[in-house]
Image (cartoon, rainbow, N blue to C red; front, side, top):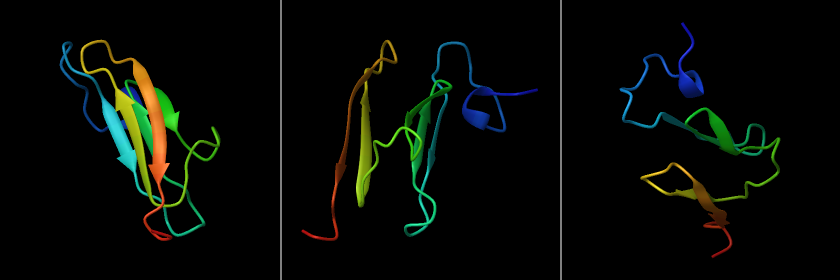
Length: 74
């Protein structure tokens, strides 16, 4: 069976599924999936170099904000 965000196991009914995938240099970008919705990815063009963060409401699962912090340039 298919589970949310491509995880190997399903989550209990009162939990959210998530998956965070790190990028590989500048070849493969990072991605963040939350409750079977892609929040950040190369396709959405909303990732940056460095640390990528998605702020999600923990009660409703609503995306509040996405951003990135360039740890390389300072």
